[in-house]
Image 1: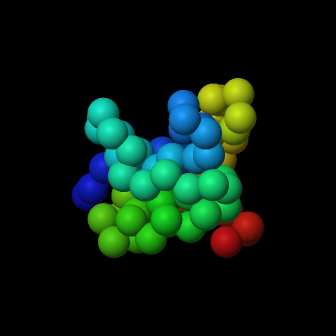
Image 2: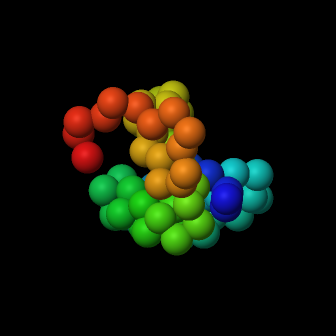
Image 3: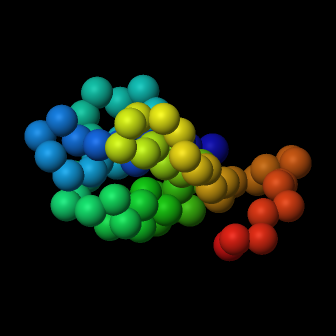
Amino acid sequence: MGKNQHVTKHPGGGWQVKGAGNEKATKVTSTQKQAIDVAKGIAKNQQAEVVIHGQNGRIRDKDSYGNDPNPPKDTKN
């Protein structure tokens, strides 16, 4: 299983996709939606999780693309 991908505000403006524990952003985009799409692609490839943070930095959503032993009863996707 790969690193979880976090979508957060980028200090220089826009939104970033960052692998868990990485110093640098994998990708910086102008919108959160673009960053989420990039993060989902990486997470699907690595069988990892996407962790989406809001403007305030708090986690607002998660999506798992790995072999989750206890999959949530998630009806949004």
